[in-house]
Amino acid sequence: MFLKKFIFFIFTLFIGIISSKALTLTQYSSSAILIEPSTNTIIYDLNKDERRPPASMTKMMTMLLIMEAIDNGKINLTDMVTISKNASSMGGSQVFLQENMQIEVHQLLKGIAIASGNDAAVAMAEHIAGSTDEFVSLMNQKAQELGLKNTHFANVHGLEAEEHYSSAYDMSQIARELLTHEKILEYTSLYEDYLEKPDGTKTWLVNTNKLVRFYEGVDGLKTGFTSEAMYCLTSTAKKNNIRFITVVMGADTPEHRNADTTSMLNYAFTNYKLNNILDKNKVLGEIEVNRGRQNKGTFSAKEDITDLIKQNEEKSYTYNITKNNIKAPISKGDTVGNLEVVDNNGKIIKKVDIVINEDIKKNNFFTLYWSILKNIVTGY
Image (cartoon, rainbow, N blue to C red):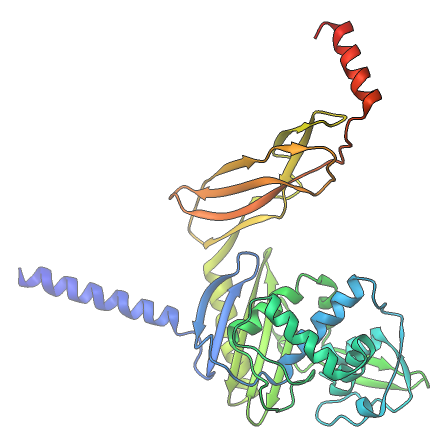
């Protein structure tokens, strides 16, 4: 009896040690998080909701609003931006813009993403919103839209200010949203480049995120440092068709910031893989359309469906599809029901909308008459 208890004790202790090691991925940061963005699964976290100054990681939200403005057609990469006195006078990290200089959005985006230029961030904020105050309002509005409960911005660049804070979790969610604009990686993945000025001179830009060069797969996103925030980094890496996002805040040196980031990424790539369950382009079936010029359409999932699992894990899945009653007219991409994915353990992995793949117009008198006549003639 004593031997059995002793063996059980040793086994429990052994499991506890393994679990403890698996969960201790950071040594130097005050807060941290590791997520897989397609499923938004949190793999590891340390004080993830603690409010801390984000320093220049703030510029991820700045870049997000820039990318939205580009994708919405509000601005173009080739637009010329006139540099204001306010922008040119910014301290801290800068790309040395001069007042009244005119420079392309493309160049300013490089200056923000690679060299963390405060002057470039202010110039873009003024170009999009008219003033930095208005742009900050848009930043906070976007934070609310994303459901961020521990974030408030007071400026566009991340220099120390009252009521300017975020958390590791919130930063990971901003990064996740920013990555939906894949073009940003063309900038954040560059280790070095040149900012080309209209007078023909160039400013050499070197990425403040050294992992872009020294860790395979890292292609973003943003560093940060102030004396209050200490060393911060939101990083993302993709290998073997899987991407992870890490955030570290409050590390004491840039080397320790990189060490904690590398530790989390190593753990993620070693222990996890992504199951691609369903492609959004796959036709899943047909749905009836009432009063349409055609009485049926096909449908697909609105988005790709994936599942994060351990490397040695295998799973199978089933779908539960609920279709709505549909009337014409209806446009391609309109929601026509929902789809629930369930794994072999009965766990709901995801629930997404299903969308119709065709435009179907409403029947008019002539098409309805022809349809009835055709059915009479063919005997249906």
